[in-house]
Length: 125
Image 1: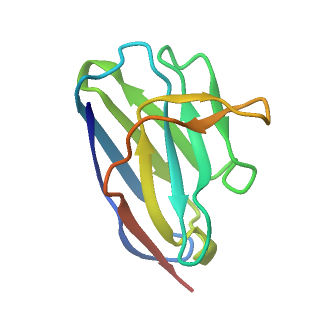
Image 2: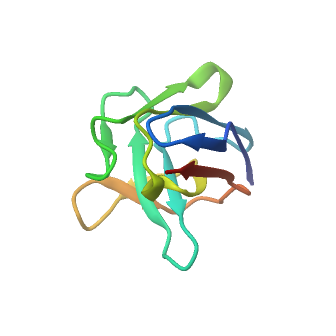
């Protein structure tokens, strides 16, 4: 079983930045793709970004391209999400997943592993 702990969320004004971290522990998958997802109140969970083990494959949702950057430190079993130029519509609970697979859209955007508690990101206008 993999345990995931997300951190780094908070309240920020529009145009600001935040850096999220997700640490995986327990039975980690050394070659797994990790990813970030988010869920806003009353909405379904949606894909944000994913990164393969070697960082050779990186995918972003269209809504965050050019503003968010995903990275990982395999030695620390940690994945990061640098979020710049934040918008009010980015407000959500952000969750990571340590086992992301190919989805029907042709991206690595299907989180099948366990989920952490998430970290709240609130962007004020």
